[in-house]
Image (cartoon, rainbow, N blue to C red; front, side, top):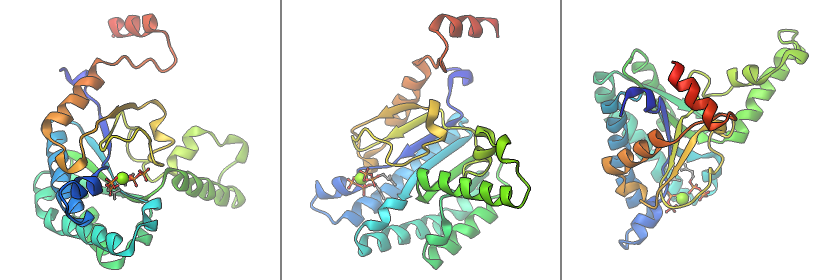
Length: 246
Ligand code: IPE
Ligand code: IPE
Ligand code: MG
């Protein structure tokens, strides 16, 4: 695979932790705990291939409606990840970002995340974005509100608002759009993930449950991606001619 057909930005909807645990007669938390291993694995897989952006959908706005003990466990696991991987992420030059509303996150987890983001900011090898308390619709609504406030203050001309202005206010604004979105766990939906940014993403769905996610699953997704023709509205023939001329 040449680097030209490798995705620059892979985003993963990590799903299936609960079913993984249930299949073993374990509590759902055990699934989340094992899911954290797959998080490390996916970061390594991206970094080894020179894929510069990885976004992981770890907790959605809608996930706040889960039972409190499960939310608490997930927040604890996020905190453990932030503290436990802190040094390794710095060593490997990985800059961490959080997309979503950090203010919603309980203080100890939020602090650990903020510290991780701050301390890894100099990383130049790869960006790891963690989508926490993230919702695509909410992110767009927040961006629109920010634009409206600026318009009222005279800093933005309403008639000049376009896709680019909206994009600039999304929490993902510093990253390119995802090229490849992988969803584990068998469901074929986006569940409010990167609704604006995913406009031309290639989607890859696998029945593999997130705690069972391996390098091979990742490789299969990337290989499938690299065989697809991205047309962006053009004809296949136009795309072939364009590729031949560059
Ligand atoms: C993904 O696994 C983790 C989160 C959404 C936080 P789930 O917890 O959704 O697992 P299933 O879908 O119930 O198996
Ligand atoms: C999607 O998984 C959200 C995350 C992976 C964080 P869910 O398990 O919450 O999605 P639904 O409810 O099946 O759509
Ligand atoms: Mg699920």
